[in-house]
Length: 251
Image (cartoon, rainbow, N blue to C red; front, side, top):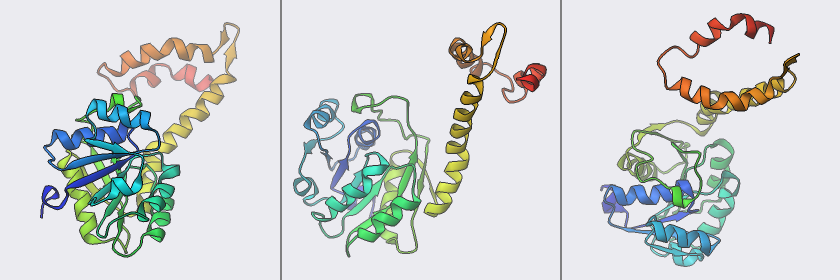
């Protein structure tokens, strides 16, 4: 069975930028089932209705999950386990729960432990996003030509993995499967480590100065220049550092 044949009702818990983009993307690819928004504040849900990210919305788990086939948790990672705990109290048999969180090891372990028989969890991380926030900024084509990493464990239901994989393929993503631990290791190296290094370098810059002044204010002046520089051809890793080798060595 295809995704559309298997799924009639999708619940999205947490309708921000990412959750809203999932809803719009489902509509973009012609999903004919119902998309239900589940949240804690009606103000957020009403915005999701306004932009067309969901067909209906509710604050009530029981109402949202009635006859649901798939639940996508689109909240910040730190509250996902709590939402899953509340969801399983009202989940119909056969419900597949997935998420869009960027960390997997601890999260998958926690949610797997609370899954009752007949309810299935599959961890997923769509590698797409934006600096924008809120459902008003949601993008229907956000996942087109992206990668979604799905993180099954030895106990994950194979049919549930297949369903979640079909979801992301339908939305335009290339699906890769790996363990939660392998996911966290690779994402830490590719994303979190460079971010931490950048933060550390900013702290170093705070202490750099010469008779003309401190280096930190120059960051703000250079931001627009560097954005423009990235759009120009050339080897950013080798070109500019090579030309400023002396200054870099003495910074």
